[in-house]
Image (cartoon, rainbow, N blue to C red; front, side, top):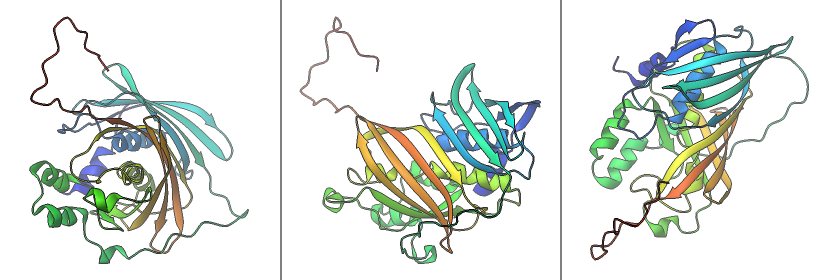
Length: 307
């Protein structure tokens, strides 16, 4: 398979190895850890495969407990917590090399009619067709994509277009609000299984949400001053959608403090209907400053901190 959208569908197609146990592939990537959106999407597939198809997922709450190891399969163990008349609840534990790396609780709801109806409208933004692709915008600034980014762009299953042009200098960042917005859609068809579209969007929801935390501090692409990691993730699914059609991901960060940053996202379709709400907290640790050439190495008798 050469199409990144097809590879994403294949990544979400878990192998069932027991009644409530599934195994997911973890591609060998040149990354320090498995992408969190992959683990969340696969865990939601595992949960959904144990629920009747007439009950779509309406919410999930998850914690990233340990970094996943690229190239090592992940086993997903599903606990059937409750099967009610209207709601179904599943708990999923992701295990890699005998250790729990992630857990997720998902709730599924049989659709109902009536009740209160309202939503916050989206901000007015340009149509995605008028905006440059992310890779093209980076090429325009750098002249060419670095080899690592070029490989990532070829494997990227989503077309990403930032509503505002990327900022590259401290002067451009000065006074920036902690907000970001991107248009996204899968780069190819994802088939007709609604669960796959839900899990593909869950995958995508972890890709840019923490941008809102970083925007006032550093450029989104280029040299990073922080080691970032997702800590927890929550989503509420309001309406049916297709992840291979354009959706607007409107993001904001109400606070960053104590090494953690909180981000909230609202996902709309091109008609302005609110599809999904997202909240995530991330860990932000500054990279240690490189010692100057004149700095002397530490004596062997001095202890070295592990973390």
